[in-house]
Length: 298
Image (cartoon, rainbow, N blue to C red):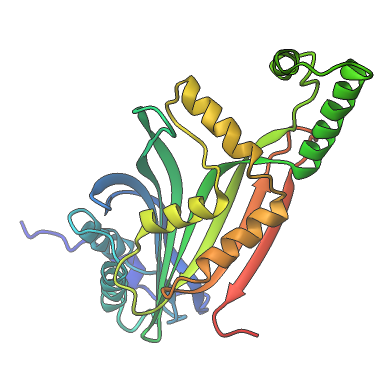
């Protein structure tokens, strides 16, 4: 008995000839190798369908090409290789290929004072496209940090000053008494509000970049912000964090400007978009600022 030839319905002619901008798969589970870590990721892989008469693409060919991610460290060169394989397997059908990866980078972060350390999660997305032999790649990184409101700090200081006047008016100041007052809840009647904040960085990389250097970018951003959120802490670390916040007051506008200025110095970044969100502890809404920059733009 002769084996039957399996039908290839995708090779049929479309009843409604029309090119399509993108056809593919979203949410494909795949491992990726980043900075020595084997991470779980989700991939969106697709190509354009420029031949309007073709009924469909060959999605299994895209899926198989994603296998290159399993054992090779992630780099722009690897993404370009995969995208070229997408196009080579769809010759005559497609001229544009794209691949988006979504994962969480895990970095072990030390405490400020004590020998403790813990893991911190940084959501990362990488978008790559190959069109007419032109390749470009963008990174998106989310970075959590802490921010203390300058306005709230000024108002709290004023209340402390007023309480000091009320408690020590017309009195001979004694060092021990003032020291005790400073350490009591009666003296420090108000504290400024702080909030957990998030910076979302979208970075367009130079075409010649060899590696993503995610940890270096995150370190640079956290240094610019000054008050990265902590993992495992002891009381000494918590006190050091309180000191850092008190000396690092910032509005969302300040945070956006700091990040833009710091990242614009990188020779590997040609454009960036910064979005910071301060999840207000005073209000029921968020404070948000955005900034964009392109190398060479006036």
